[in-house]
Length: 210
Image 1: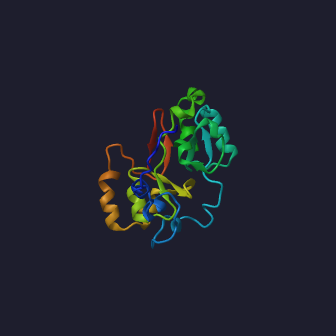
Image 2 (image 1 turned 45 degrees about the vertical axis):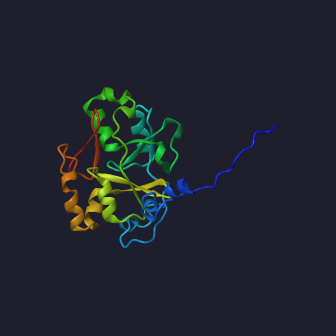
Image 3 (image 1 turned 90 degrees about the vertical axis):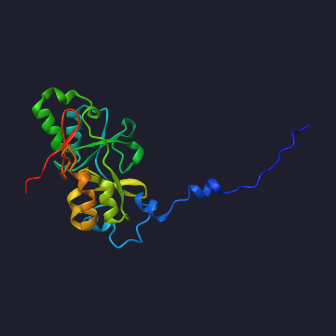
């Protein structure tokens, strides 16, 4: 004989609590309309139509990572994604794939200063992942999300499709947003640049000389 079961009405509370609002959709790059100054408007035409940032496997030796970055056309200070080893060079990247960020210039500097670093796994010298902003997110909100970082990944449909530099966001955000962020940007670590470079323990941010 089967045991009687009672069905309870669905309160829908759990579903309502997880319903995404427009701001959340914009932060994930899932909504591009509804704000006057979206992040996407600051980027060069076609910037997000490329396959996305170059991906370097976290288990690659630094020397091999440099070779791959050069082969794929990386520029010296362009942010490069450090990704889960299983991801290889797939682009664009889901947020869960990202383990860190680096630049070709920074990696080259590391090897120049200490040639033995060329055999070190990339994950040992990579900075934590850059902050993320949505392509349709308001510029002021993106500036606040940036914190002290020199750049942010730009999300389109929840995936990393490109990046925006600190100087670009600062140029177009309102003075009120810039003022509110000064206490964050001017932190003791001096992370005030829009250029990412590597150091032996983590990334250091160095100022750009015009």
